[in-house]
Image 1 (cartoon, rainbow, N blue to C red):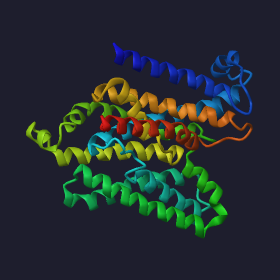
Image 2 (image 1 turned 180 degrees about the vertical axis):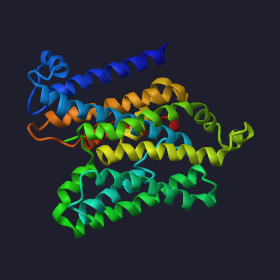
Image 3 (image 1 turned 180 degrees about the horizontal axis):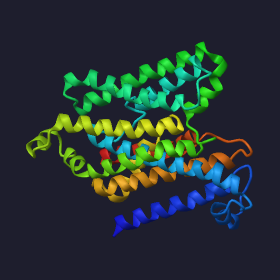
Image 4 (image 1 turned 120 degrees about the horizontal axis):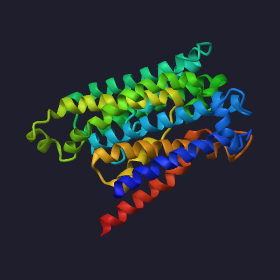
Length: 327
């Protein structure tokens, strides 16, 4: 009963935030005009609603789904609740590739940056696998190698910023994560991937539940630990990579959403994955709404707002864990 209530509440919050996100901004859209503007080209705010804000909302929801589910899978495989796409270097790999295109090939078409970001995420995964394979892809080795690889990628990003200051504004906007100017093109590029990968993630809940028992127990139950961990990691990387390619290097969503979901429904992945996906979408929409109204008519990138929202909750989790250990 509690699990169903949590899922329903998260879904209703997502719908409410989607409506609010369509309504707020430099140009406000009255609530009574949202429906007519969505349904008819003759609506009073058709262009703003249908061509500007609706695709922005959809991209935010889809990216929130992808980042959150990627975080759930990574935390389960690494058996570390601090794991997330940005912590193990996936987001940093995507960021380095995107920054290289922005700085070194500034005249490239707009679609090149998302493609480079996705390739960078996959490249980070390949490097992570090559460095960890002699350690049998153990959770500890994956976490430590991921942090080290992410630090190297971050150093590369900083080097590009220092040596190519002319395009630094565009690079910083992308690397902070933003839904600004997202259009139906991003929806079309993101939706098929999420529609395929998200059900695959949920369909793996039984394997993820078994992984929580430890490698030895999982192997004794007939699970090929190394192989399944590899494929599930690849799934998590694909979800994170396609999400980052659409919205930039947004942090904290993949870290905080699984924690929030776990506190509500526990660690069973058949409930944890869908609730974390909805909470991830909620965080994205909430951050985008706040970013558009806090300093109007300017916008604060959604990645900054999700960090502001997520950091206090993260500190709360650390404090709660410290108190638990002291007891």
